[in-house]
Image (cartoon, rainbow, N blue to C red; front, side, top):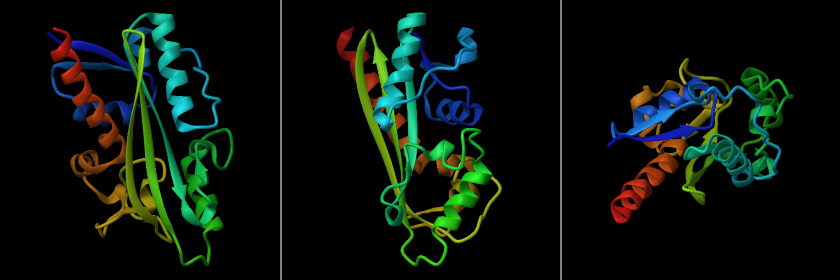
Length: 198
C-alpha cells in the first residue's frame, strides 16, 4: 500500500529532491496537490519552530500526515548567521543571488570560512510530532561555482569534496545533502513505525 504524505512546500526544487530520495511506497505531495495556496506562517526564531509550524498547520487544516523542513546556513565567522534567516538574509523577497552577494561581502577578507547546512524536518503523523536533523559541514568559497542547485549551493563546498553543491550532479548531492540526511532519517523511522503498528 502506498502511503501518502504532504511535504509542506511550494519549492519545486525541494519537492523533486525529496521525491527522488523517497521510495515508491511513499507518495510525496506538495501543497498545490492538496489545493493549499495560502501563505503558511513561518515566523519562529528556530529551524525546529518553523518546520513544526508549517507541518502542524497543514495537518490541522487538511487532516493529512505532513512533514515540513527548514534549513539554515550557519557560518562560524558570523556567529551562526544567517541561520534561520537564510532565505531572507538580504531582504523579504528571498532572492538567492542577493543573499549570496551579502554573505560574500560579510566574509570578505576573512580567512576562516567554516560553515554548515543544517536541516530540521518536522513530521506530524497521526497527530504526533517528530523531528529529524541533517547536517553537512563545509566552507564558503570566495566566488560562485556551478550552475546547479539553488539557494547558497554555488558557494558552499562540503567537507572532503573539491566541488560546490551547485557543481555536483543531483544524484550525488541528494545522497549527501543535509536535507537528504534528515529525510532518510524520517523515512527510516516511517518504515519502522508502519511495520511496528501493523
